Length: 192
Image 1 (cartoon, helix red, strand yellow):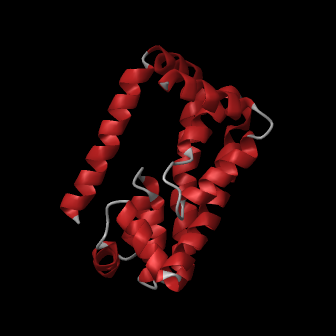
Image 2 (cartoon, rainbow, N blue to C red; image 1 turned 30 degrees about the horizontal axis):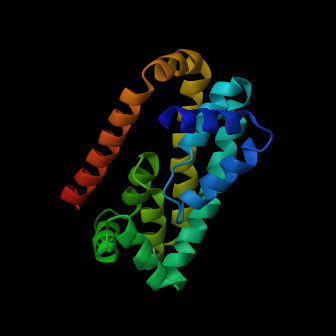
């Protein structure tokens, strides 16, 4: 099953619909969707390294626009915002993140925008906290751009070797990836 899913993502990454899929996943992930755009960005760059920075740009723009939707959900649709936060394990997320915004302000966006922690948690709670929209916008562009362009650069130059290694040990890397993601979520809960 894992191999079929992987092969399906790689086929989509090489298809003519790849750019649209990348934009949609990037947009949706910043506001409500649970799957990060990296699952599309990585195979797309691996399939067409010359277009790495175009893909990173699409990821960045769509992610920031999706972030505005997440922010709007926090401002205008608080019940939906609370449901999304609860779904991602942060039922008391508004108080938790508002405390983070009060204490660290801009640092929350700058730090969390670069990490694999779901960005929707930042965008929605920034809206709930009524964080300054202008600061939210430029910080989102900076952190999301840094993350996606750094990933695209690494994959552009080292992608074929990374891809060969990943395909050889697909199951191990998926298990390690899930363990790291779970560990990051636990760490956020402990530090929060």
